[in-house]
Length: 395
Image 1: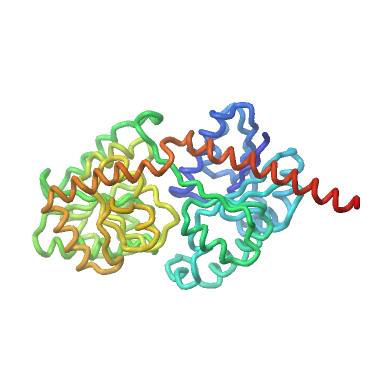
Image 2 (image 1 turned 45 degrees about the vertical axis):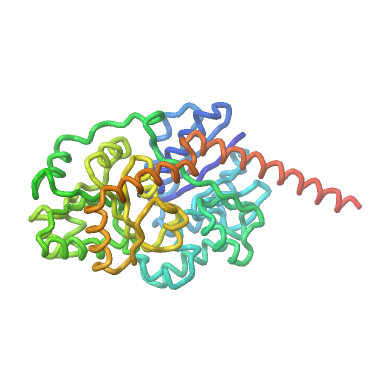
């Protein structure tokens, strides 16, 4: 099977997860050929070391937005035909026109499919978001099948006009000790984590890049309330000092200086287990998600979590989390105090998390097998549909 995977531009946790998935696919199915189309600066370029992967670098001649337009309207299908691929697979935005090659769209971006009102959390202006949603719908209409991560995303996709009939749900995996070589976090980061408030301070963790919908603002207000009460609680954030001060100003600077907020910057996957091992519990305030790895990591690595009380998180975490109104700092303070004071509650959440995580693929190779089965089914369906069309034309 020859597969063209396209994610022209983008980054963050979603991209790092797809790198894990693509790596697992190439290793599990060595006879397949993977063409990966991306920008010169994309992290996907790291996959060129794999024997059955060929990187196709795209862009550079025009501004990114113009390159994306040319790619969607013309070049993506042209490149797919040139390389005689069996599957054209894109993340979030694919080709804008149909072709005789089966086109699959993986949809991980809730801003594209959730109701319009949630777009207030997008960092770009309304016109830009409206354009993104319009082009997404062009890609959706041109696709033969869609892969999503959750039933909620599937429900929203079904409500969009012209969405394909073939919809598949494939939950993501997260790394475990059996198939990933974790390393201890560097000493300089560990020193930052242990600094301030003393070694006995209760330590929470929120793994996330910055975006308004990630709702760091609420957590900063929460930590401020806790610090005002003299409660020794610190919060590790995977943002930099510069990012935090840019968006939240003097308030967050004081909390950092006093040791209540610990900014460590983005952490590579190989250090993630060690990072979780250096915390007591997790806070997940995001108001909008498809399927956040942070929830799965907390369950897999035995950390109780307090999360935003929203349909996506209840569907994901079940009885393995404490739920709280997403943007109510006082409610978060109350739940944090409850968790800290109740060891039985913490143990119950951890055990429930170990059970809940069993509903998700154990390894990236397991997830790769699910995706590969879908590819084979879509190719088979495509051939059957072509045969039906030919028979109709011959009548």
